Image 1: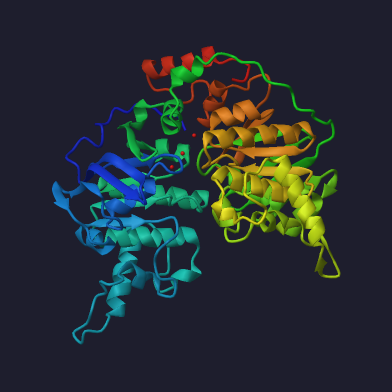
Image 2: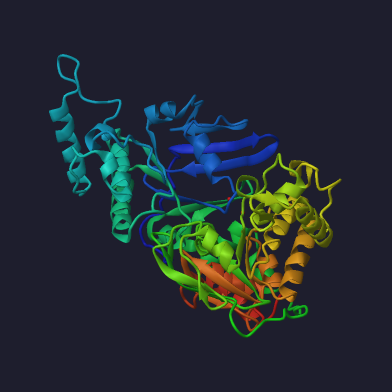
Length: 544
């Protein structure tokens, strides 16, 4: 989406209808927000962006009374407010529309719109006829064609989002917060949602819009606030900001700094085979992935890059059979993998190291030995009897090979450091002797020393001929560790970097979806973008 200047008066310049001043929020000593200032003006659509861990969700929950700030204050219409819960915020005119609609599926559309405010007759009973008529008038105003007597749960997600928006209008909200409302909508539904959002804006309502889709920001929003690591980074007009500048601010990389990074030579090339270890063709997941193609050769590390919501984790989960696909196929060593089957993927030689090792990886109360052995227990048994000696030998081999620091194989895995827990998971999957290893954020949440060890291990595995797909939010990790990088945008593979153009500056431009003349709005922005282009070198050389 091209950002262009506008001759209409700048929006977001009036007195704020909703704001935070120096808001701080901590959880168990971890700062989710650090002194964040935010201002929403009447009659503007204000984008709130940032990568994972940036603090967007926490800020929304502070604004809507779900969380009480530890420091700072929330102001509504110029007055300091102490919301005791979401109902307090709703009562003064703050409505929230979430990605997952929080209405009652068993009730009708009309009942959901007027839930808790149903019109009553003289006997104190719900006046169904009046309620349905008011709901129809509201839907007509929004140009939404829905049967208001129909059960909400029978409607599609897009229609349910429209009902949530209609409810926000029915209570005459002065603020509407939209948290990833388009992530599961079809294109036609997104168009309708945007039309309604603009109508609300023109009526003087202030809207906060959270989305990971960059195109939507420039299409809909007037201003943007960027958060990073719980801190405020920038607030300003989107029309005066390029994609490159936005992504740089989100990731914490200065445009000129990245553009001026000197070229460094690659280390020893991985021993890549000629025939593909894995070929992914046309993988489709409704509203998430769109025709993903990917080829990985033995001994090759292929990086998957993209901003939050680009489809990186969904891609590896779909390959592994852990996410239902609607089309496409995966082949390993020339043989088709059974679709939508984790067991089929394992048998074909695919292993997945999940992004969240605590929720989807380690079993904390089991020993190091048992955590490593989980994936190979069927292979280590005969007639239902497990060979303990074979397991002990295998575990000892991998603990030594990966240099897992534990007092003994019997130590509880929860007692290990984050880096050693990650090594235990890597050992688990290496025991299966995979052909392809899918690694989703393998160094997230571990210290610098452990990170270097894991990175060296990945490089060693590739040198030994393992095909690796590497996901990382850290640009440097991808640039330094991958042979090629495939860049995803909104569930599609949009570009690829190889040895001819693999550098931090080129990756930053690809993440921003930067194309010549596509996203600059004035001479200052043109200069910054041109600087990044001119200084990029064909060589090698973060989160929400």
